[in-house]
Length: 483
RNA sequence: GGCCCCAUCGUCUAAUGGUUAGGACAUCGGCCUCUCACGCCGGUAAUAGGGGUUCAAAUCCCCUUGGGGUCACCA
Image (cartoon, rainbow, N blue to C red):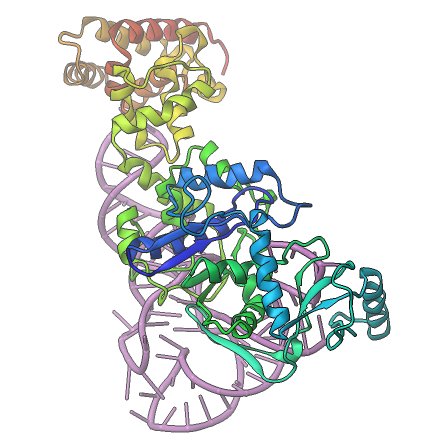
């Protein structure tokens, strides 16, 4: 195992969304590529917003995506525990070390005092930018048993910068820094401090996160310096936006990973699409998981925020769906069929053979199930498209359906070639347009105007069932006056 | 508002001083054809604007404009 140690550190405040997936994936790819360690750490120090359900959703999402972690919940490892809420003592220890070395101090100012000062500032200046100047910065006469927070004694001159793997050289002036809080009154660490302590003690070599954390990085670097430690490398990823360029949210559609799972996406498709949002590898668009691992690099991660394009996502997704074997798809599609009220076993022979033609017409498992539906539904329960019925199940086409039924009945052997030969001979002799036979037949057989090839569909449905549906269709058509 | 970041077809992006500015999705034609797909062939379509530097700029510098992030005892 190499010394590459990367982590994904979500806070469990909701579903794992698309931007988070990409961040997690890039870190994961980097670890895999270098035989390093991928750590999953749960940053759950905000009791107000964290929920146990969210923790489960994150774990479930990561598992579904196949982004397995080498250290983290359920796996543990040399730096356990991997929940920040269970590492309070570690933070306390590091805070005390910084206090003793003079890099941090106990501040007894109340929220009310600070809030009032901030309000006064914003009132007077009419803008944001208040920086609290604690009177306790250089005092040592406070009572450590009294209620207090621990603040970092931030430098006021100079700059703090680093070379970001994505953004290059970035620096922030220290005068922008205030004496930020390390430990809250309730004893829990604040983001920057918890992150610093964990990344340090977990020996993380590269920190990856969204670029909304760019401004936090100087604070963390300042902490490393104060502790006499070498900061890790940083790679900040640009935001992933909704199709309209606004912050991605529920109104754009599926947000969480499990939403995509429910819609029948396959993990490799989602990963492939997301990988190419913000990263490139020449002209290559389609990648298997292994190709992604081999090709991924930070040099080709872009700096611009990107919008998701559901159309392209569907395209890439469809590609990965079709990459799967029919047997695998059969297993995967069963739950989606069940959702439609269709019960069928994954090893069902008809299911196995119907998948090949239908998967060319589907991008997701849900669409696959939709396309498979009529092969398993009882004749009486067939869903009939109204528009198609109006157009093709009409008296003028009734004779065609009857004739086709006769052909199906007489076909021997009952296979595509035989059926096609008979139908072609008939339509040519009768000077019938193929369309006028195929479309009504499609409606009768499947209830739809779109399906795999006619002969293919007939053979798949079987002689008896095709016959029943064609005869019933002919009756319906004959009875359908008007149109 | 301060600070920081960003800017190539509609969208995702390639091109790290010299290309007819390339690819993918979408779109528009065409092929295939019993429908719809898949696939294949072809078209339309971009360097935000203005100044520099250079023999040469999408590429380097400055300004403008536009977008985003952040300014908490959230993460």
